[in-house]
Length: 223
Image (tube, rainbow, N blue to C red; front, side):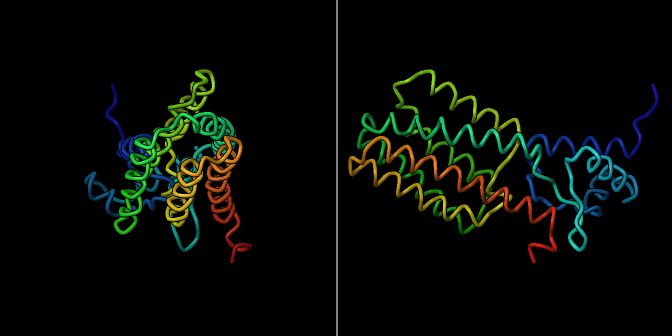
C-alpha cells in the first residue's frame, strides 16, 4: 500500500474539521498555520484547499482568501423553509400547553445566549438556540409535526451549518425575537399569532444567510 501523500493528509484534516463543525461556514483557512501543524510546506495544503474548492466545500475570494463555504446552499434553503413551517406550527400548537416554568426556563436559556454575545462562540450559541426552541416546541401535542421538527434539526446538523458563524450579526436580533415569542405566549396570544412569529423568526435567519451567501458570490454588487 502506497504512503499517504502530504496533500491527501492535509485534505483529510481540513475535510474532517469541516465535517465535524470545527471549521464553520465563513471560517478562514490560513495556509501557514495548517502547514505548521502538519509539519509540511504550504504547497500540499494549497493543493488540498483547491480540491475542497472543487468540491464546493471551500470558496476563494480575492483579498480574503479561502473560506469554508455554506455547504449545499439549495439544500440549506429548502431545509430552513421546511423547518420554518413545521417548527412554527409546532410552537403555535404547543403554546396553550406551555407552563410558566417552561417560559422561565426558555427565558433563562435566552439570557445565557444574550450574555454569550460579548465573547461570541457560534457553535455554543447554536446549541443554546436549539435548547431554547426545544423548550417550546417539545410541548406540541401533534407527534407527527414534532417528528418533522426533529428531522429538520437533524438535517441542519448533517449540513454542519451554524448560521450564526456565517452571519454573526444575526445573533443579537435572534435573542430579541426569542423574547418577543415568549411575551406572546405569556400574553395568551392566539396560536396562529405565535406560529407566525416563530415562522418569521426562522425565515429572518434564512434571509440573512442567503443574503450573505449572495454577497460572497457577487462581492462587487454588494459594495
